[in-house]
Amino acid sequence: MTRSRHSLFSGAAAGFLCLFGVLSAEAQDIFLRPALEAFVDKDTMLVFPAQVDTFQKVRVRKNENPVFGTVVRYENETGTCADVYIYSLDTGAKPVRQDMFEEHCRETDEGILKMPEQNPKITSVEHIAAPAGKTPEGGYEAHYRILSGSTPMDSVLFLALYHGKLVKVRISYSPEDTDESEHARLFVAAVAAMLNPEKTAEKQDKSPESEAPKTEAKSEAKSGA
Image (cartoon, rainbow, N blue to C red; front, side, top):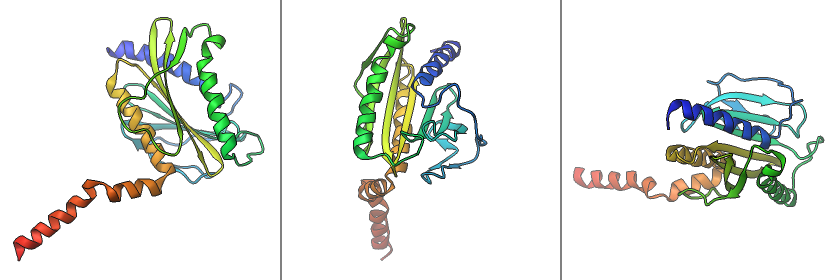
């Protein structure tokens, strides 16, 4: 894909992302953070690094209305955006229960599938299989193929419940770009790992790679003896 074509596609993708966002046109920026700084969300104490895989943090937007919440935006050199939303379901910021989370997942999925009814520029939306790679644990994940006229776009949604807050990841990219598909998967996996640090640490302890240094150490000890 040429740079100019990708730029046009990225612009369309950004427009689609706005349709899914929890921010409205009336939302006001409360603060922005420099891209090279890690950001700590005070509501959840989640730490968002300046760099995640190929994505650079470019903006943090926080709104006083907890329904709009906080949006951490990342972007890579190809122009693909990865947005992380942290929000509540009501203006009182009451903790979201598991049953509320499950209902919200269904409603969000239905809303995405019904996009053609609300936007005449969108021809169709359908579920597609997840790209190769393991699906993150502890959340809801869905993948979509969106057609705007004859232009296709793939999009991933990841939703998780964390300390009474909703955490949502949205990334859209060209289906012709297999690298972007993999980078999107790695980004979602990184956010999921932030939400489940215990499981991530447990997997690392059990991985074959974690055993390799011990084996080498034993081998060196024998040769030295």
